[in-house]
Length: 57
Image (cartoon, rainbow, N blue to C red; front, side, top):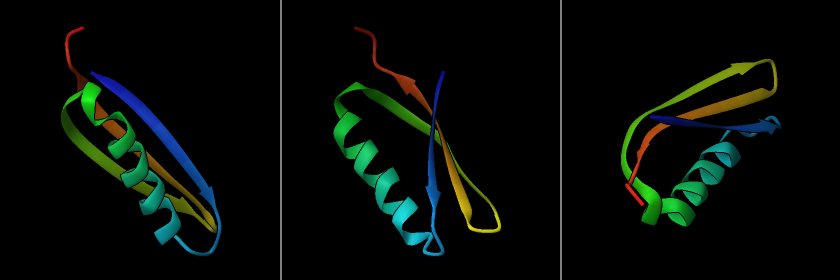
């Protein structure tokens, strides 16, 4: 299992979701399964943590 964290410092949390979707699209050839995407925020700091399984190389 691997994790990647993406941070967005903005009032608009939709930008974070776009970054998450972009990361998934760019890395889909190496992702076997996305286990979880957890979104958290503190004030205007939005964080997404993607937990995934990587394909065997």
